Image 1 (cartoon, one colour):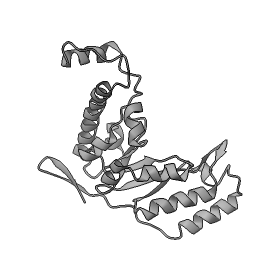
Image 2 (tube, helix red, strand yellow):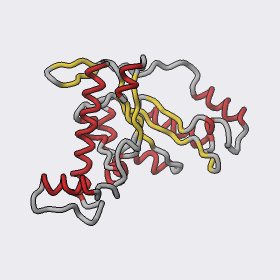
Image 3 (cartoon, helix red, strand yellow):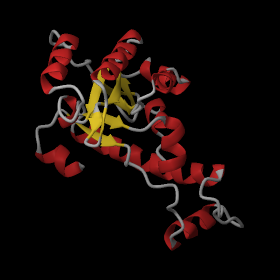
Amino acid sequence: VMEIVTKYDIDGIQFDDHFGLPAEFGYDDFTVKLYEKELPGLSPSDNYQETFWVRWRADKINNFMERVSEEIKSIKPDCIISVSPNPFHFALPAYLQDWFTWEREELIDEIVLQVYRSDMKRFINELERTEVKLAKNNIPFAIGILTGLKNNSTPITIIEEQIEAVRKRNFAGVSFFFYESLWKWGKESENIRNEALEKIFQGKISRPHISSSKKEGKLLRS
């Protein structure tokens, strides 16, 4: 990370849903000994999803994220730190990724939430979650939409409907996963998908502005 920040003229850097550890991890000798040192008389739960065991490990990753954020900003204060995680109710128990704390602690500048759902009810439910609304009111918050996989295409009508749902709720924008499936691999022709996308995005839209400065030891954003 620091090599990229120091050697290249970048606007920002993004961490995805794998910037964490699978919840099954943490039973190595080093981690177990650290846990037992910090909590005398206790050992990690055999259940990798036990609440306190998840929280303890997630906090270690939170501490690491704090170090990464501080290092980046110390070298390049205007570098955008973006995260593209899974929904919080999955990210934390499955990957120990506590992105909501990162947002609350002002360690990140932008979120692009991966809401890869084909069912509209489930899609909208993710947009309406409390942690999403809170983060959205504080920093630019965009929604990642699944445009299809090679053997499982997403109809352009579903993509259109999901974009409309995102816009209706005033999110910062959308991001598509992934590039080729925007117009390829669908049941519709490439021309039909292209025409639909051109209709959706008729004009240029500026990226949400993010400015940062250090004041009283905290990162302020406007």
